[in-house]
Length: 310
Image (tube, rainbow, N blue to C red):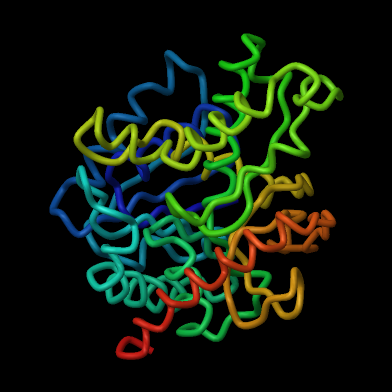
């Protein structure tokens, strides 16, 4: 199985690293426009093979898409990252042209690939990729919910003072500081609702921390985070390549589901070898439905800025 990652920056390189040492794919190609950058990252990862014991072949290429031919999954991380004080939405004008060009190029060499979009603003870039390529909706997946949910579970575990792997939780809605919806009502600790252990005030604090989780790290690091985003992409790719059929919140095209049409936004999906194999209806309550509709309106407003690109 072959994976191409376009964009060898922190997120792309971390994704390649995790895919390699976990043996998720047999081959990974890193591609970047900066001369020698992807080649250097690939070489650095390959020099870990004997110490972390993996057999994945990792190679790099400077803007030569022919090296990506025959990819089963293509991950698009291209574009500029957020800087302190910058919202994901502010990136749209810069990143839209980049993502469209990348999608066209990779499909020339890998026409059957499933595309995973990471570039921000992620929901809008996913919508752009789907519309610009004309691919069936199961083959274009926005990675945002997996990351947001991992941060949600982190904050829940911190509040509970329990291991994160014992906590379940999901974030749906837009992948933005004001549009994501941490579903505290459905979160659990080893099968028990977290509301049995945390007060509503504590749960509200967890949800608020989750929503600004990316911005918090940007403020601390001076740029976007990369360990959790890269690992979240690898987690999604793993479910595709190994047909694991995990339920993962992803940004996908809705056609009536959750009361929305013609929009890519985060909802729980079954992810397998065909990409998005099912959109799961988790029966939101009235308050959650209102939040989801509000989130969809915000994402749809950003999509309106794509007219010049599409």
